[in-house]
Length: 353
Image (tube, rainbow, N blue to C red; front, top):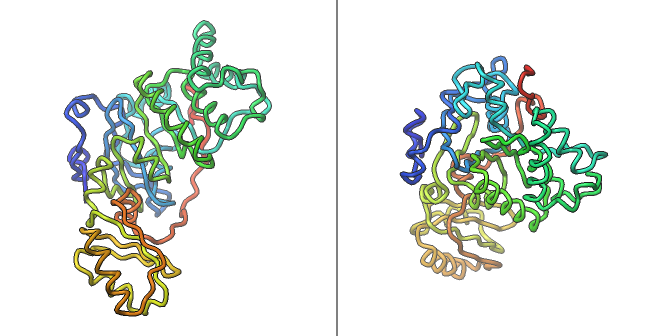
């Protein structure tokens, strides 16, 4: 398991020295959240450096949303501390709120208002002065390529355009830290890539620190400097995407579908030299992790021929974040045990949650 030596969970942070020298934008130390006898978050610690894009991954019910709700002052912390831009969220919630922007998974812009009206209302809620508000709205709409749609009702926008509006709206008060919960859920592949590129541009131009949760492993791989994997309320892995991939036994993944395989076929595949893991995915499909893709491919084809088993399909690829995710969290389906309150816009400074 990869742990963070700073966090008390034991992980080695593999970031470059220049990143390690930066101050912490987010510092979560031994944080706990309990609902009665159920522990949703159990002694989790991690630090996010200024300017990082930090990914938070985990199965359903793992504790990701609960962690973010505590960090964004939406629910109280049972034990431990969370500091956002140097502010203790339990003791200085207003200061923490001024430093953050939050983009929930659900689209929350008012459909009957225009794009510009949605931006203006949000800016007013955060007490952005009129002189700054006009310039900020114009700049952000240009940044997300929505200037020509500023007078259009939000309900006329596509899903990708609405997501871009949500991101622009969350930046209107110039936060230093940006929380995004599943930012591309429901978008088509082209819109997803457009959002990725936009986030990278925004991060570079505004020197933002970004914490993102996602179920898309390719998204985490492309965007994140480091990734924390949470399961059953605990931090189970923390490192850079390349280091996490290297931590999984087996450097190659073979996906093969067999016809007429025997009942012990999974066991026989596991016995091949260099194979570290075999997952039966149904309908004769197997996912095989191996340290030598070429050799294992040759051996399994020879074994299939000798056994009278037909190979319907076969592909070899490098270990992915999907394999990392399954390695650390297992394959069982999860259901949320606690339905905490849903995401809403973070309370504006001065208003208690």
